[in-house]
Image (cartoon, rainbow, N blue to C red; front, side, top):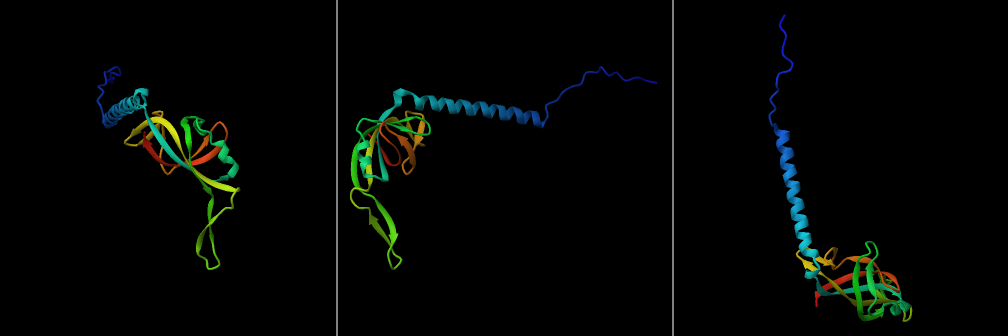
Length: 167
């Protein structure tokens, strides 16, 4: 009876799965280099510029007008990122809402004086405008047409960014 040698050297070959794992590893490393390479150049404080962020706040109590104090820091409530400083209010108008008249047509109705108001204003911010949008402080993305819950030193409220313009 013959005995087989179990100590024989087994030659290992690369198979398809090994090649796929190597390709995925190279792609992941390249992605990290690209991601953090661009992030460093965008978030550098040397690249930050001054921008005016125009905003609107709708349907707030008329007494809230006094809470918009020029120079107050405005912070995004969810991340704690400083959006900038109030530069001032531009318009203060009676709040509007839409209702239907007797014929079923949609009409605009204004709240009475000294009840509810809509305001627009401006925040002075420092950030970077990139091809993807505006980055506050070079790190936090904000965009026109988007609503954000923010905090100032005197009030918490929801504002809608209407425009971002370089100073």
